[in-house]
Image 1 (cartoon, helix red, strand yellow):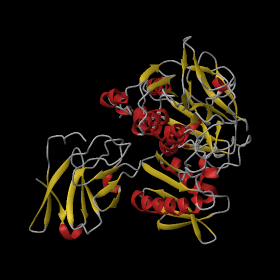
Image 2 (image 1 turned 180 degrees about the vertical axis):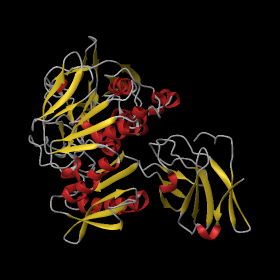
Image 3 (image 1 turned 60 degrees about the horizontal axis):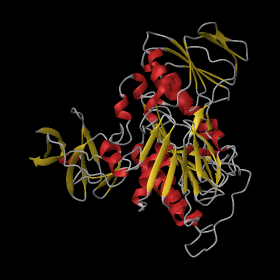
Image 4 (image 1 turned 90 degrees about the horizontal axis):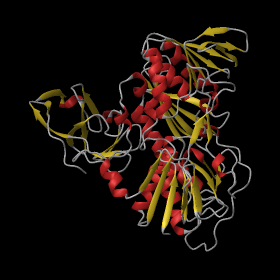
Length: 417
Length: 106
């Protein structure tokens, strides 16, 4: 391969570029990023960046020294708008094209918006530019903030806003926030964090309308209630950025469909991070975006799938001065058990069990025992998953077949909203 | 010289965070005492809460590990080393001697 193009210059794209060089690719490396910014870390956007504790330079994922070492052609502020049928030509929105031998798709996902016009004062939070706009709005004095969606982005944003002295309401359509991720028992425990942080939590009701004229004035719920608001943050999930692949031959269904090794239906095209549906699962986790590129790049350079990647789902969330961490493959009906601490105060460590086997671990302010259990789970998981479906060995001559057209049911814990 | 705690208060396998600016983490592992800057160079996480395995401490957030002897990260996402500090025990009291200079780049 003489040229490899990485489309997407965030976490997964940067890791893929690093892996290409680390695994010996010394050809031309082109990295295309839609945003104007060099790769930056998104998790702090809803926390220290919003509150003003972290600056933009604190978010940098890379430094000048590394950038030089990578020896890549970077294009910032340039969006890919198409890929030809053979996956050899990337069309850019500045009118240029890039001819390439290999392609890494790392275009991530976009914050989902509510339908209708976007009134001033209504925000989403995923990119640095979005975070800048929200931060500016929040630093204009004490505001009434309504956060729509009680997932991780919603909860962290609510927590940051409350810490800044704003009056905050969280609206969650489900009976409890994080119900899908944590199950009813532990979701109820974690929902109390909002209350502890002085935030109003309204559950089980959707949003009927965003009210306002030149600017947002309130949020009308489906049960008729109206919450006045100066600032509204919409945290209702993200949509994978795949429109640009419409004219390609790649299969797209809520993400780019890949086999267990991040390889698409074209062997010289791989996908990583939030945009990739790997082996039927699309996981919007920081750790997936950093674990997939090594294997994806190995398979890309090998010309077919020689290794599978199936990291144990792991996510964390910092809210209301506490750190929540979860790892594992929890299924509906798995029973949580507190093994350390208390759900009443001071944090706890809980395991989810099924047939006397631990399937997942959840901790609130118990980082060390959590890491020990996460590592044990990851070890057991690697053993149980490599046995029945061992990665295709290097001796397998033929490329793996195209992935199934429809996504299998995703692991319940694998989608962080 | 910063007093930390008495040696018997920091058993093997445990760590303590010293609330100076910037904070320092002191570890007791493999029969030795080590002190490093407490804040992971990658993101705001306290290494004193990290998982300890021999002379390596894993950041509680991101799986970056640091070598307690050198402060050098063993893998991504951390790229810069943390500072290491000298530790002494005087009359059963652990002290940290803060080093002001940055570690050599990894």
